Length: 596
Image (tube, rainbow, N blue to C red; front, side, top):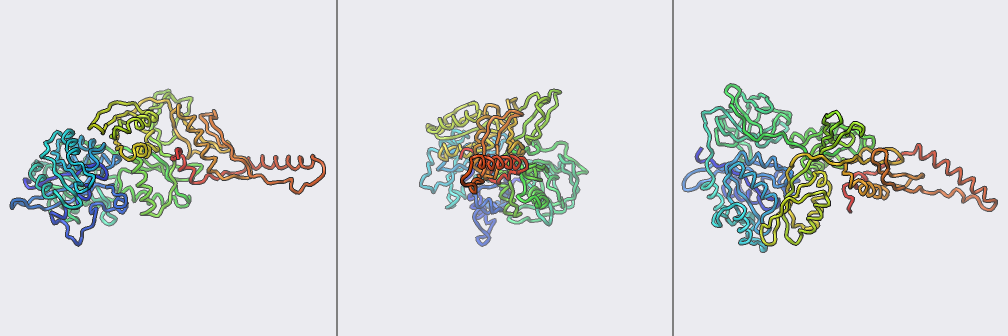
């Protein structure tokens, strides 16, 4: 066990952790030049195209230092705020972490939040200053930021470049010399933490785990403690570039288990594996069920494709356990699913994977968050969809989720960032200058306000310099109302939204104006209204296409023309009562982009 080192890589998006992981694999000869390709651990096309890590990956490297052979288990983690639970479980499986900071960009919000996670688990931090080969690198300045943040010495920081391979040998030596070997008792009852799972269509769910105590052999009868399910370990092994079966995995090591599980919901990241005959007295701490933060309806464009969409969602869920969905129906869009996502990026990724991997074109409804509504009798109703809101005669009050948001930006953008957050009902909690021109601002604000276009607008006003990170801080009572959109008096349920009373008038007016531009003109007037309960707060009208019925009437008395116009008026009135208004697809998406 003394020759094993378990470590993960933590960094903000686009600070070069996947490229540096590639260099580590090449330097330790884990992979031959023939097998090598850039972003090797990012297996999805989507990850490569966007340059982001969506799933965490684990791989074992063999490294020789001073004649001693070491086993290095690397866990590559996602850098985006939406996937922070995966990062926390990966950190729990390690003794050390490489903290990678881009020498040209400096420390950003996600770096700080992941660093705090690592320090909570008492990990040894090895700071790495990456992208030293860039002409815009500021090594001294960024090194000072790292020293201020972590309290390390300047000599502890390793200058490196994933592109040229600079500093990779120093990183490997530091991993062996600074990170402690895992502690654990091989003779104790089995206690292993699941930190990730993937789905294989032939073998079922493959769970990746780290053994803290005891041993696991192939053929063992094991139990997952939180789901209370029991399985036979058909195969256990270690994770090289491919899965390498082994007869036994002992304390301190990282491996995988295949036990023919076909339902991804049975394997939860953060669960503990133990033996049935000799169970461990306590599970690994920190397990949570992943809680979705953002909810949206996903509907097939063609209602006949509903069953195909269900199959596609189930297959996607096997690969992405944090996606939740349940069937729902809408008068405007037919049958579809109410889905829960970790955040807006997660929602985008799911939609894109449905289109790419399953060839399903879908319509997304307006995303919203989960509210707690309390009735006058004191019962709590969880509201994921505006139509679930209890009637106003039995509704007492509504609570909405709040977050603590950390924004790091250049000091010249403080004004615009502050006014954006205050517009979104944010409250300033703290403001700290990290350096003379970089400032960290902390706000408390409602989650619902960042669901729409907050991230895009933040990037726009800061010219891309602001970085953003958040974590939930609980529920608070709020003055929310349900805003309905009516077309010719008929409610369009897919456009309903729960919104703060102060913003409802402005929001309703803007939606009506946008819909007036998007809904095609008919032979009759279409009234577009926004209403709260029975009170209409905004109205726009799509004017009818006028057919000139008096064209054939030339000469004669004015009463002949009037008679024809009266007849047309009656026809239009009747037509309006039976006429259907088609809402184009863009209308559902337009609500997300009201500021364009």
